[in-house]
Image 1 (tube, rainbow, N blue to C red):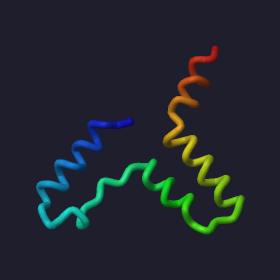
Image 2 (cartoon, rainbow, N blue to C red):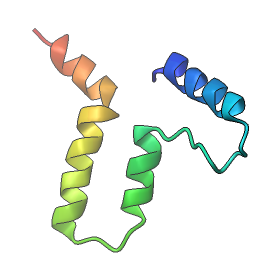
Image 3 (tube, rainbow, N blue to C red):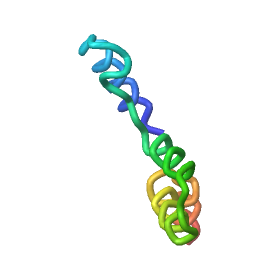
Length: 68
């Protein structure tokens, strides 16, 4: 959700100029998506889902915080 940060990363990627694969803008969503593709146990997947909820499930957090 932090579009400014992603755009800053992309600008830095352009300035480095070594090539698209030398500097990768990698979001939490990218990270969790790649992790879920690994051969993991259910417990490992559950931990990853918990981390996803913390860092990417912002709508879940907002609904909890607004529920007085």
